[in-house]
Length: 292
Ligand SMILES: Nc1ncnc2c1ncn2[C@@H]1O[C@H](COP(=O)(O)OP(=O)(O)OP(=O)(O)O)[C@@H](O)[C@H]1O
View 1: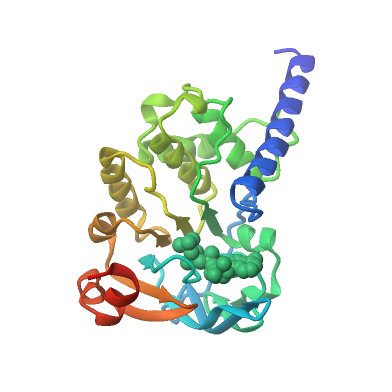
View 2: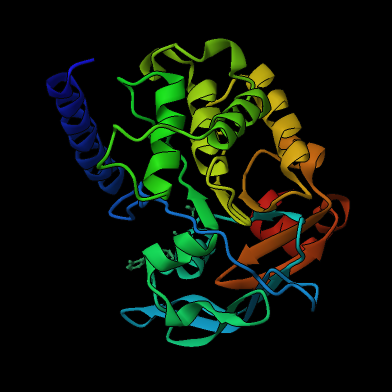
């Protein structure tokens, strides 16, 4: 490839990123997904058995208490499911963890030493908290491999230099992720031609190449076929232990397959916590969410 062509390719990728970021901001109602998602490996002190810790968090919007005395903690390697009615505060909670929204008061720690309220959104992403919004936001015109490559290069701060070659280790990491997300057979396929479920897996893969410690996933199986939902459950079960996951979902059979502990949010705080069977039997949860 000539330098001119490489330069042109680099420019096209920059354009893709700009367009994609604008798209994400629109699709997520102004809650931009930070496509850069840079994640720098660093130590998170989990010696106290918690990778995420929220205590007595409050947020009001024009006097409305969206988060109201929220307490929640997640263990390293845990896969926690969050359920709750519309408006319970699930998205706002994720916005707080990722630095998108500042709480009025409360404590939010990553591990036992990192006070997340002291950091901005890109810094929090760089520390290893990855977030996936409900709609897939892959680069439709790039191949599956190019999407993962770009996520890795962006994470390493190398997006400006498309001349930069991936190391053997980085290529190995992409190969491993391709296998994990069930797309090893679609490496050269254009992302725009993937099914909805495959696009969701690819976007999860774009987070995984950056080796996040905590993944926040908003309704990952919404719009998926039954088969895709089953494969997503398998995927999440393989991620558990290596990463900590917080999954917001309404699909109870999916939650039943993946969950150990379920947290029910309502009116900005925790209404109930336990196994799915325990929270499903809780009268208050039936009243506000599951129905009779
Ligand atoms: N920026 C904002 N300004 C004003 N009100 C807001 C803002 N963000 C959220 N809210 C309100 O806070 C409450 C909690 O919203 P949030 O989106 O966190 O709930 P949710 O549990 O994610 O709901 P859903 O399941 O519908 O996505 C809602 O009543 C919502 O209208």
